[in-house]
Length: 490
Image (cartoon, rainbow, N blue to C red):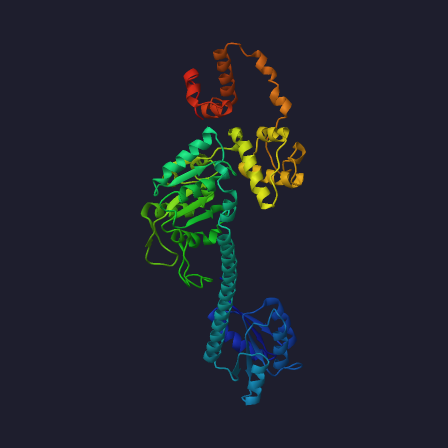
């Protein structure tokens, strides 16, 4: 630790020696200046912790030197103690007026000099510490204010799919007659009877995971209580615990009132945690404890509170991969995934696309105050064949754009345009769908042998992954296992 520096400005060498002899044994680094001008230069360069300044000196006196020290930013805060033989009140008052903090009378008493110096150095240290604390507090207040503003914004849009948009969609995510949609509806109906079971909904973005969660809630005995949707990606990390579990007034800067967290707001109902795979690791442990105990502890509270909340979570991430790399807790996964509902991508249920197109066309036409037009056959064919990487959400937007582009009249193929930012496979033309691929000419005419060849190709393409091969072929996995038991899940 560096020694504190004291600058002595006095034109009398004997005074410099006496003051140095009194202070140097105390461990201070002493800087001596034989006059005002020399003292100003040393002060600007060395920035001492305290200055002892003689009043009567040739040229400019101590008052003038002190005024100049206080006029400079670098030396303004350095405490100045005057050395004077005058005890007149006017002289003392003038010294304080120009910025001095104290004065020492000649002839010197060593103990008095040391006592005054130590006192003002201590005051200076405390002042700097107080300024540092005030600056930190100011930064903390600003940070908390920004975080609280972020929280209020997050409260205003808890999820990517608002309640208004859900109402606007109705049950569009469930429109269809495909086997996959019928399976989801069966799962939802089954879950209505088990109102306390945690549910994990998996599926790509835009496949209607929140719609499934709302349908589970609104058909259950919890329907009269709140459904609180939360997008885990949108939770500010510094306020995550407070937002989930609440906080007490005054526990941190900016906490101007007690505030309920989302768990307490959802008491008796359902808390929907979307994008659960992106929840920070530290918060995962706290969430697991709440799920196991049924109790929350608001930030700053000594007592916990019991809550009755059904948790439905959703993700489009590979939680298995995250668990393997330590990004997600396995015990939390088992607690959340008491029952799993998988929402299929739209490309896996193309037979539902014409029904969804008609639904959205009716919806948007009604909102625009017009009669719903018809689709040209080639436009509907193209939509049915398109891969829809954005799933139902992309289809909805595409139909709205087509209606606007057509001006409310017959919707032709030219009106159906994919957004330039959409990534995914291009839709095949109607002609390419009607012509069999050339590779089919090499297949055996025997149906059973042809099926074996197709399954073998699918297994080769998916490196033995039966589930993926079954998806490509549109068949059940058991059908592949019966013919190729060597296929493995990877």
